[in-house]
Image (cartoon, rainbow, N blue to C red; front, side, top):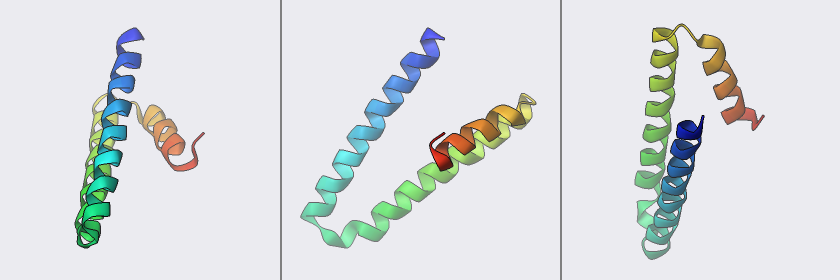
Length: 75
């Protein structure tokens, strides 16, 4: 589980950095809003699609459902 925890910590660092960069870019140029939102939507969508395909591959839909529920409801 240590490897999984390390990967989550790395992913969280990257997401925080991306949020910071996104807001800094938006502060400098408000016209990037739609493009920025689209990048976030595409990334989240790609992640969810990958998670679904991987859960099907590993026959672990229950794990995917739990992850999706945590993403949606924070639980």
